[in-house]
Image (cartoon, rainbow over all chains, first blue to last red; front, side, top):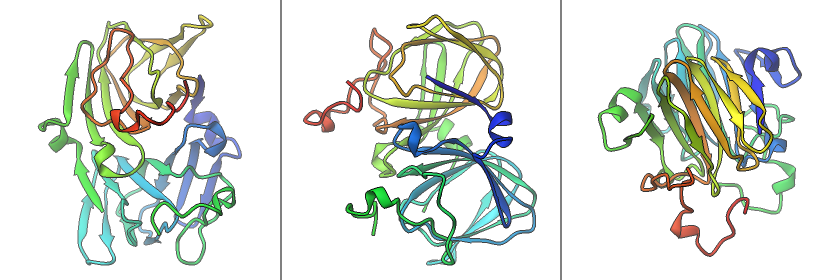
Length: 137
Length: 137
């Protein structure tokens, strides 16, 4: 059994900060769960354009408000505590937090912790899976 | 993109109640994410003995307090907001909520929504995976 506390993860190298967001990686690939689990804060006033081409992600809003825009359709959804969005089609999207937004996020395949967002807003595929097809092309 | 609200899920047939707990299934196997994502309440004063033999589960505590006991070692961990436990070894365990405990849970493989806990506190394997080995035997 793995037991971890968000407070400890935030003080460790499993806490990653980037432009507009910070993410505490509670579980990564090495933990062997088959998914990774992050507690991520997206900061007020940011415009976060993302496109995870190699990962499926679900995001559950715990605190704060904002919107998410689906870039293919232009559709905009309200984000508030209790709302979940799932990028089941590797959807290109923009999150616009109105306040700091605290979220719980799950990634499949699991994030290794060594990725950085590239220019397209994607995480690269895990090199260990290079011989496999991406989850959705 | 899938967008769902906990309030709506709680009013739907994706909200499952059992002895000592209730679980809102935000994502199930059919959603194609490769994991399922549940918002689960475990009720104050219950003693929840569980052993997921066919699933790996991570549980992140959002509200409330309690303890979890690892049955193989007898080790007891404090549960409070910000604590996550991950059953990476299909660990037999007992959760004892002191107050109602609200949690966000992720299962691999994803729960189909048709399982019920059996006498051992397990969910059965997904029949669709019957020809595959269980994630951990």
